[in-house]
Length: 384
Image (tube, rainbow, N blue to C red; front, side):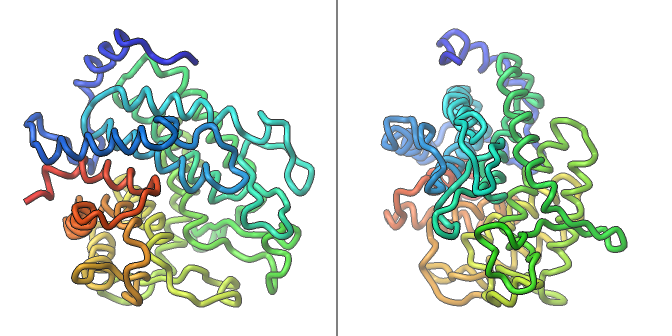
């Protein structure tokens, strides 16, 4: 699609002024703040610094760059739109997303290790012997902003982007449908999860296959399921999201106080009993917050316990812990920006990330752009 004209952008701005802020999102006040404006300017400068505003949208996912870099840029544009109501961020999103959805395996005509060409973005990054594999976590990371965009278009009545919203929704639906074979549901508990199989090149050496995927890999897709339900009204997506939420919640440790959980669980503990790190844990948390806002399984008490996870375990004077139980320090400062949806309940992570930002203590990874967008989104609530 061609880039939007300036006149069309003006129309978009007029349309979205009436947009209702999604539940849980702090609406930016129509009051100028030089510090907040500087954050917006910094975001725009970072955006231009990554391939002149094109980010990694022209890349393939062979080395996971769409999943672990471009997806953060796509999310960041949506947060900036929510924070500023400036439709230029929607235009940037569409420019990037059109390239990403045009770069699926099916569109490129390439096949995975089993000879299949699907709606997904395969990678050779983590697989055995460089075999091509479409990972659920990658499909989840890439499709979540696509489905979220579609929901924003519907919610904000941005009619000029409805065609793109429909395309992105269909891509998200098709990408998750690839993993139906990996879905496992227990009707007696109402819990569900995705699992690896022995023939897949990342799990052939796993003891006692099939092995459940790590939480972050499941819940990245869980966020997409929630958004697909909001967009399509199809209860099957909500039911799966509920099953994933029950499954995750049942594996959180502790009777009270901070929630702690492991990276692997179940049969996966034969691989490692490592406590979840705060980078992968940011995906888990984001799912839990989105589920809470959508009335799915998690309640306010659960979110208070995640808040305690951050305030009592992760937050440290001048730095942050490496894992959700408070061990180590300083390895994942960039990732704190992805904990900032907790600002609805606590400004501690916002203040930590803002301090790292002011100190120039962050890297240049796109997740820093996402964190910067969330600094803008929650600025009026947390800047004191």
